[in-house]
Amino acid sequence: MFSDVETKIKKRNKILFSRDSQCLQELINLIHIQNHRTLVMWALDCTKLPLKQFEAKYPDELRPRKSLELCEAWARGKIKMPIAKQAILDTHAVAKKIDDGEYIALCHAIGHAGATVHVETHALGLPIYELTAMVLKYGKDNFQKPVSEKINYYYHRLLYWQDNTDKLGFDWANFLWDDASSNKKRIL
Image (cartoon, rainbow, N blue to C red; front, side):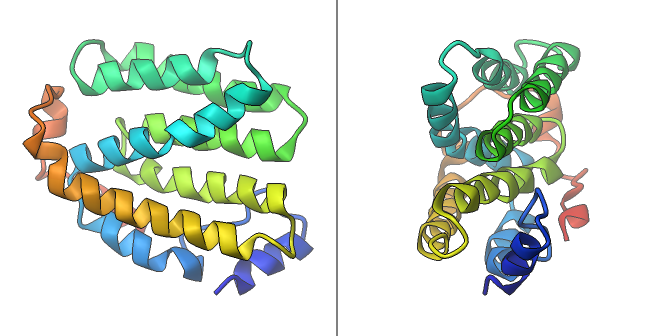
């Protein structure tokens, strides 16, 4: 299940998961059938833990939190794309300034979660990068169980949001109501 990840570890790749990772296929299939609003809620929800972990080490670095707050405001139609887009780019810029692979990956995970508001295909960036951070945290011999548990968590949170996103009465930006113009096919 993790043979591709183990190969990437041996090659010292910086990103250890991809759209082709065997362990992500069920999650990708579930992502593929979601509307954009559901993916936004899922990504913003699931990024709370990586943000908390990031802020525990970098409490004075506020750009990732600001990015998520602005992306949620954008999803709700309260601000326009350029403001949120700059905040997302600022989050990715943080990753370039730190020298810790685990936290670099967490920063990218947070950035992709926020960018899900813009493009559905960014939703997959959250697990790709957060799971990479987990492998770096637990090491090549001990990552399998926590990564499997995290994938299971993603899957079940996505089922929750699939059932509840449109029942909760959130305000949405107009572009998120257009379920006809999906770009999820690019995920696969």
